[in-house]
Structure formats: structure tokens, C-alpha cells
Amino acid sequence: MMVTKQFYYIFLPFILLQSSLAFAQNLSARVLDSVTQKPIAYATVLLNNKGVITNEEGRFTFLMTDNINGNDSIFVSCIGYKSIGAPIREFSENSIYLSPKAIELKEVIVSNKNYTAKEIVAMVQDSLEKNYRYGFTKKRLFLRETYTNYIQKTDYKIKESTIDAFNKAFLDSVINTVPKQDTYYTEMLGDLYGNEDEDEQKLGLIKASELYDKNKRLDFENLEERFNEIIKKNVKTDSYFKVKSGLFGTKLEADELFEEEIDSTDVASLNKQLAEKKKDKEEQKKFFANYKRRTLGNLYGNLPIFKDSDYNVLFKPRRYELTLEDFTYIGDKALYVIRFEPKGSEDYEGKLYINAEDFALVKMDFKNTKPLRNFKLLGVSLNEYLAEGSILFGKDRDGLYSLRYYEITKGNQVGFKRPLQIIEKNKNVKGRRKQNELHLKINASFSGKNKYEVVVFDIDPINRSVFDSYVEDNIVLPTYMPNYDPEFWKGYTIMEPNTAIKEFTSEVSLETVK
Image 1 (cartoon, one colour):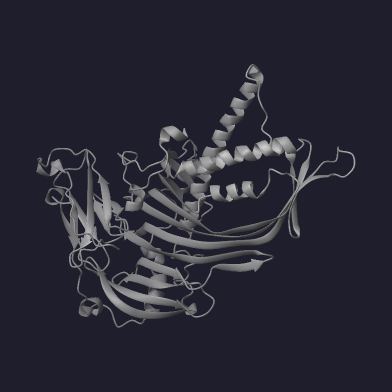
Image 2: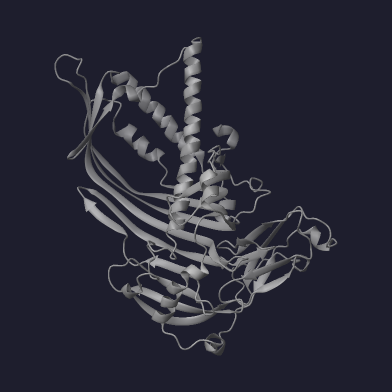
């Protein structure tokens, strides 16, 4: 990461106020290494038992509520550093410095014998039920997803086209309309009800946003209008299409490509159209909520403390080469650092950070050692080449550990090298059924990276009856933002956005795209 020499000052007038005065601002700061001046990512910041995580640039923001005053203390901790804690009024700058903590092996082994890596991992597994919170909970959490897509190749050759408008110029305009690189951000805050079973989850959405350049979508919509005009002029409404790609084919009715035009004086038809749009809106809300719930359920159900996790080193240690690589600290707690590498068919390598006192896993770093999926079949290829990230656990007020932060980046590459035929047929026309044909030979490849970040702020145990009685309302859709809006999340505690998000701008304004 870039090292910044410039220090910014937070505007916190409440520091000068009396301790009894209530606060209504945000506390923003950056956590830095006191030696290197580099940002410390994924440090834990606690205020009145509420926690946030610093982003990859070391930044965090706390919502200052009415019950917080200058005597309340902030505690900052990160693996490998001395923890600090001080009243809010003492943080007068926007930079908080953590000092690296030297390793003293005597402190680590004074109450433990010289365990091997295998023995330590075995004790972690034996202590799971004692150390971690299982069963139904209600979790207030924040999810940020970042999707970046790249077009690497878009070669094609027209073998045949009986519709003059479907020519090279038109197809080139299709390709040129699709952006070579596109980034999409989406964020949500909500309450997740459930247990370790990814199918036993319910989500109460509070607020959500999406940030992308809609101008690129508008270009595509304009192209779609041109396509529809070509279809209307050249294709019969009672036709059907056969779409073939090599050995594979499917059927599509032509009337599915035509939108019904409504007479503005036809009240019944207009009401029907409005009802359909309302239904579509409800379906969009339901789809959005279901997608977020499944995403969170998949991430949460794959934690290494669960038996069916992809990161199964705790439950299948014999399949890994385990090495006690180092010792470190989180605050005053000594940690074992164990490296794991697959012996055979397992997919991941990484490091385990284990509390030497209670043998709880407090952090896991992981990265795949081989493609998770890699196949080529009849000109179609898929390579899931990347899955790496970190998982952090923290201790709750009752002494049990639960998820604090989960970050994973996934990368994939897709290739398509096949012939493509679109044939219009019509059984109501005398003579040959085939009316038109577009025959292409395509050679295209795409790649993308998807990053998921989950921060858990609060977690409360609930029972089965509370879970069963909670009903999802599915009333939230993400608010579209063409440019980053720092006011959107005002009044809510989230994970601080990075510079790329803050500086994101579209080529058009919101008024243009409405």
C-alpha cells in the first residue's frame, strides 16, 4: 500500500466539550503503524462494546450516539501490535498509531508445554464448542460487494446473415458498446437471523445502495432499441427462433421479443400495465433480498469452525502439512501462528492465528493453491483461478467468540469459442419454414474479480421460536448512486469506504439517467 506523509485533522469539536455533553457527529480516524507509518488494515476498534473494522487503508468511522461522551474509551487492537485504549477526548488527531509488539517466547510457553502444530490444531477442534457461539443468533452486519469485469477478447466472423441490418457495422457497435472494464459496488446494512446452516437464514434489510456508471447501461439500452427496430421490420410475430451453438440448441418464440403497445385511452389496459409494473417491483425487492440472504448464508456457513467448511483444516488436519511458524500477539494475548499447506487434493493454504490461552482460532488467512474449477468442453472454458481472504473472530461480552470480519476475493476467467446460429422459422408461411438466419463464429474471453466484505457489529443469541416468528418483509431496493455520496450512510455505522469508492464518478449525472 502507498505510505502517506500527509496527516489530516478530524473536525471533532466535542473533544473540547464537557464529558456530560452528548455527541451527534461521527468519529473518523486512520490507524497507522508507528514505525513504518503504513496503514493497518482490519484492526478492531471498540467503543462501548460496539465494534468496527478498519478498511484496507486503515480507516474507520464511528457513529457518535447520544449516550456517548468524552469519558468513554476507544480500544484499538490488531494482531502483532500493542493494543491501546483511551478516552475519546484524548484522540485529537485523525491518526491513531499502534506500536509493533516484540515477541517474548517465555510469555507464550510459560503456562503451556512445547506443543506441536498438530497438537495445537487438535486442541482448537476440541475447544470449538466451548469457545464459539453456535445456534440461532441475530447479527447486525454490513455487506460490501465489489464486482470488476474485464473483456479480454471479442473476435467474431459472420458466416451468413439474411438480414442486411445485422451486418459487421452493427455487430461492431454491439461490441464497442460493452465497456472493456466495468466496476459495480453494492452495499447493504441489515439484521441476519439464523444459525450455522446456510438454509436456516432470514434477512431484515435496513438500507442498501448500488454505485456504478449507468451511462454504460444507457448505451446498451440505446443499442437494444436499434435491435428491436431491426427485429420488428424483419421478423414475423408468429415466428419462432432456433438458437444453435454446435450440438446445442434452444427454442424462443418471436412474440417474446416484442413489447405490447398500449393505447393511452385504454384505461383497463393501462391499469393492467401498472399492476404488472408494481408486481415487477415487488419481485425485484424479493429477488434482491433473497440474493443478499443467500450470499451471507454461503459466506457464514463456510466459516472454518463449521465441519462442512471448504477451509477444513481444523476437522481434517491429516490432509495438511502443519508448521508452527511463529508467535505473535493480539493485545497482551499470545498467539500461535501455524502455517497449513495441502498434502494432496485439498484446495487451500494459509495461516491460523490461535490464542495460546484458550486455543481459540482468532484469525485465518487463506488462498487457493490450484484452480477451484478448470474445464474446457466443446469450446467453452471456465477457470476459477482465485479465492483468497481473511476471517477474524472476536470475543463477545459473555466470553464466546463470533465472527467479526470476513473478506474474500474471487477471480474467474471464461472463454467461448464456438459457432452460433440464430434461425427464424415460421410454420404459418407456405414453403420453407426457415425465414432468416444469422450464423457467426465467436472467439471471446472474459475475466472478473468479485470481492465480498462482511462486518458484524452486534450479535445476540436468540431461540428457535424467535427465528421462526420473524417474517421477512422484502421492502428494500438499493438506492442508485452515479457518484459516491458521503451523506447516504449518515447516521449509520458501516465499514469505511476505500479511496476507489470515494472517488468513483459516472460520466453522467443522476438527473440525466432518471
